[in-house]
Image (tube, rainbow, N blue to C red):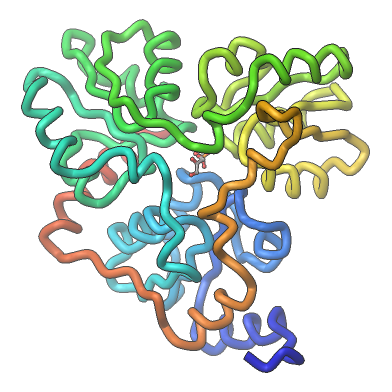
Amino acid sequence: IDPTLDLVAEIDRLRKERNAVILAHYYQEGEIQDLADFVGDSLDLSRKAAATDADVIVFCGVRFMGEVAKILSPSKLVVIPDAEAGCSLEESCRAEPFRAFREKHPDHIAVTYINCSAEVKAASDVIVTSSNAEAIIRQLPADRPILFAPDRHLGAYMQKKTGREMTLWPGSCIIHEQFSEKELVKLKVRHPKALVAAHPECPDGILNHADHVGSTRNILDFVLNSPAKEFIIATEQHIIHQMSKAAPEKTFIPAPGADGGCSCSNCPFMARNTLEKIYLCLKNDAPAITVPEELRLAALKPLERMLEMST
Ligand code: 13P
């Protein structure tokens, strides 16, 4: 790429030329969030992808999110800036052992977090995100136990909230797993007025100190509507970009890891996406997401069920 190229202007030109929509998750770099047509959490982004009339969807997030967009909008070209942008939760739950796990628990309803592959979705009864998991679980027949995969922390939190009997898949997110309870308590002592907002992918030890638990969008709404002036944010730290933009007078402190610093809350997969790669994927129509039709239809069913069951 010509180093003098104005990437933002070129992306803008290509977006118009291709009738493309750029969707970005809150965990993307601020400069990517700022050029996106829509920034959201996993549920809002799925809804946008399902409803768009653009010809091309550029999905700035991680690969499974682009895959969800393709499953919901098969006639669109879905491109992602970096094909290697994976997800530790997806990695923790391979299709073969997941199917075996299901076979071992035939009476269970398989409720699966959206952070998984199309193959695992296809073997699930209903998909959830962190913003609709509780509402969906509450709609499921009360006499059936639940198999929750792949995030054991979100699963345990749901178990606690709903009182439902659940068998949990032993997966977790490498980012949320690294927050340190000890360092969080020390930080709270130094900032006694700060409220803690945490994502439910955090372990119990972190959630126990939270004043508010919710999805990325839900945490954002909480900090913007709260009269408090200072917040400790226990999720991937790029969400703070939107918080600071919308409430520059408030202070947002990323939750600490074991070293007391916040480098642990940078998702290395999300960070693979750059302006240069966004420009290139729009220019080259690649990397494009493809999902074999039989697999797509099987994965679509529990995803559509999720959209129907979400308010
Ligand atoms: P939400 O977007 O539902 O808050 O979940 C965050 C996440 O895990 C993205 O990978």
